[in-house]
Length: 640
Image 1 (cartoon, rainbow, N blue to C red):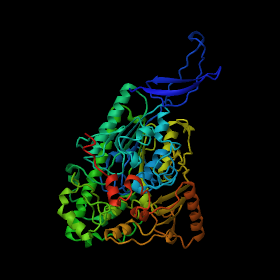
Image 2: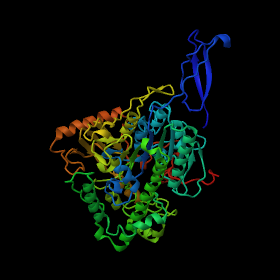
Image 3: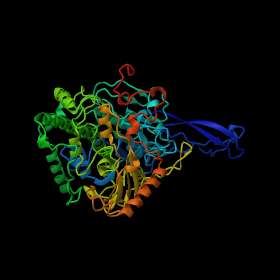
């Protein structure tokens, strides 16, 4: 195992003499100040050495695995009633717990920042992203997580764990993501002993912008899912060989199933023809499955089809053909991802470590993606301009054989499938005002700590809760200082009690949501929410026609009110019935926004018109140029 140097300032209890000691240990103790408890005389004979005891995890502390998937709606995986086979997740849930009321932030980087720190995304400076184009020079928006908001990896490493991360990181600023660093906001600078994956938000699955520890490397052509799984198992094997029984933390965050949807045809083949009945039938089947599983109320009603989406039976044969192919590929991609997760789980079982491993599986970091447009995309840019819907459809038909292959550089399914895989909710990813943007399936698996195997938990919870729950189960107290920096409060709440008690009270009472204009506030089952206009659909449509989008006005956004205790999928707007309740929650949103650095409110108009972070080397670049830069594949020249 690699040796780690510790630079400690030592103070003599006799005369205040300051000396610097370089301690080398096999256990990777973090670099912290250590009080010297020996004696320093003029000679060795009248001096007494002092060596601090290596930090060890609490007796019996579990291994910890966090698994975070990308862009998966509530109704996709079979584990929560979807029509896509996910046997690994099914098995974990059937031997663990299904959490049906778990929430993310509605988009990837804020979710990841909140997950890793146990604090709200705005409080840790990631209301948007760490990309130049999606960040702004304000405390809640600069995309730079401060050192007083320590990560789960930093906490666990200082408590005797080894820490590994593989896959998507997503919260390293673009300006710091080259081989020149600085590296303090790379995963290895945020507490991970090792990292293998990509730093951005999206990458090619066969030619990823691949990083190991602190250097970009050349990928070997295999699928990224396979690469990160091999590396995760390798990290654990080497660690256990060097220090048998020492607990580890693995953060496993594949780029799947974010665009581009790329997967070997053998995973797509079983789904051939499975979606020919279309997205309307899919929705009906899934809501019936969800009721049987008990993950939604038995009296749940399916929301109406979104007005943007055409009824399947009214589509042309060509539309049905290409749209079904998109969904077959997406399904194969998700099933393949489940398989790779299964390889990690099987390794832990075969090596005798699974029973004492605590696993959290968040099936999605937001709702289903609406970024595939109405027709779906193969290689079209997210912000492509000048092409009509008809031209995009014809392009997809002409290139249907590229869907799912390495040639499809931005493959994403049409909006109709996003709504279908988001059953039983309205709306999609980015929609922070809607349960469809923020509610994702969660599985908790812990053989040594869960007796109610296959149980269902309906308590409200949020992505910020996973960190304090993990620490609570492991018997670890959040430190007051990390690397001599006093730590901010952890805002999430533990839900450990729910592992044993299905009726345990949720300790998470208040939660704000904000993503580029769309916003909401939750309190004790009540929710006030406002969709912001013009939304990303309208803005992109205007840009595509080279038109100036309509001006946005936050004051004219319409707020709605829902009692989620009785109306979990937001079908009955109570704003007119209870105006006082709505006003109360609007006031609370303002308070939460101020407390969590959400202001100033920034929307998609500000992004598309380059009103933020239009400085430095990126000054004057177009939205399309910067998106390509932020989602680039591996650079063969750099990675040689």
